[in-house]
Length: 310
Image: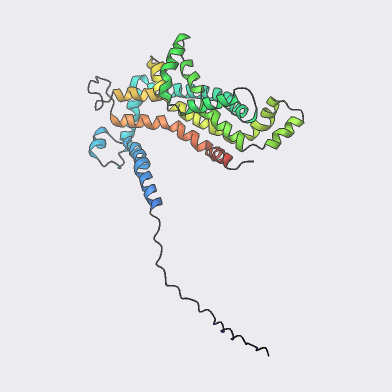
């Protein structure tokens, strides 16, 4: 007779008692952003503030006064008068030369770099990869390494000392080509270009009527970086231009620096005080600041244009 074995009843499940979490201590704020901001203020903001205030002081106030104190409007006016009278107002000629060289080179750069970037990004031709690699290599080379070869090349065609000895090297801007290449590769829809080709547009027509109107951000980006690089270049015009009347403002500041007794003890009657040099430096950087303020909206758009790929 089979024996019925009863299973033992399963133990009743007890309701899980929620564990009381031990109170955690408040998380300490991350100090890294504060440290980075303090370093930024220390190395960038304070020197600019000192430079602005130095232009309002006399030389004695600059040496013995508080570094971040305001001098006087009278001292600022005296420094301005001394700067204007230096070599018969040479500072304005230097500023005009910088504007002329940078503007001419900027126009040539935009006419060359943007179409070149489009061609590298959207067309296929023999030697395209080699040309792209060459552009990257030249872009990574320091500008000073090319000055001597450029001097020998321009001397061969008798352009040394002319405006073109500055404008033509300035206009050669491989970084602008690379920026345009990145933009047209990542931010321009390929289907839009294909549709224009199907409608009968030539490759130049596709670039002029479709790609270029959409490329305003990168055109502004290339233009801004090209203008800043041209305006702040010192070594190239220093080598190419033997006459001070053709100097841009960066080389002109070097001339002023040579006439400051604290930097050159052999200065004669054309001695320049340090606050005058500070005021000239502020004048030299003002055009770049103005260009940045008027173009910052396009610059932000251009820098974010390649963030997503179509």
